[in-house]
Image (cartoon, rainbow, N blue to C red; front, side, top):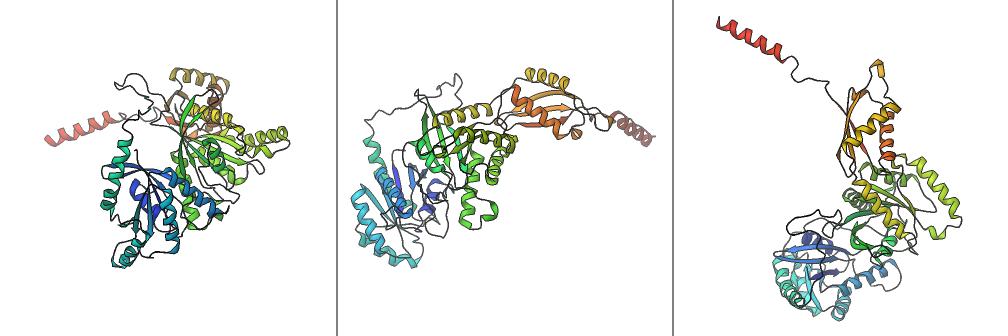
Length: 487
């Protein structure tokens, strides 16, 4: 995908709707309220046989100060500089506005190629707005309807010559590629590759510093940040090769999510959509970084978010941000560890890392903790070792005998990873108390070095029901009835 297309325009002209249409998925949040999109979102677009990268941007505002609108505009201007082609969208039904004319002049100076698109152009009501678009001096406007998919053929006709030119410009360049798999399929592919990077989601309450942390990891101001709480709305994914001090890099895709408040406080439709988008990122992630504010750690909402990640079966890393402003660090760290063990027993042994998104301290330890958590999440234990361990656990602490009926644990095996899942064949699995299951899970964590990762333990009955029991008697009765009928 050599061509990069940035969709720009005023708020609420339909940029995110067209973005979703081009990528074929509902990745960007869409609402009638203007100004929904704030960050840059990239996607792999497909239009006929044309493949390219498309960037959804925030609505251009007439603001150049350090306000939220001004920061959003600077981020959009950065996307314009990054892109090969800019698709400048206007609302054909609303007609041309002075703001459109001002931004058209800016794009004419900053972008090499500008395609003018009149969106919402379905029906005769948009004819006047389409004619007005000629006044911008950007050529013939493309009539589009991002909602209904109209005008895609015309857009393809404008993009194809530009895509061909971009490919011809790269013919003489020697592409550098990292080949992870043999063509013949020999050898084993590594767990984390460029084709399948490690999926990491950063979640937490609003204003915990999630976007600032990811910007520091990326080494650039890629996400919109500021003192206001709740700036991030979309779950934005960013691709990075995160390197350690020795130069060893790991391909990752990091998801920045919207801050999650208590469910009772989430009333507006847009915030509900943002939280839902963040929850979807958690479900698709492999490792979830729960980011806490050092000033107010382990509040009730933090515990709910961490418990959500555990219930979804994700590997969890707890990071405490804003550590640079803490004065008594040793006492604070001791209190954090004590609170972590007491309030989140289901994540016993999970890494607790102190970081500063502002200064970058602790990022190396955070990277190592993420890789360690992912390794444990993928761990597989041999069946023979499991059954030797089970025998020792039974000798140390036999299972109870509810109502005088002794529970026999006969056999144990691991049936899955990501997260590790185990099955124990036993008698009377419905009689097994939850405390004994926790005893086995805690033993698995300690003896097989699986701290913090969710462990799924299933008790399954064996030999309680014989499928052939009574069949001989039933067959004998049927034969007697048959013989009696013949007589």
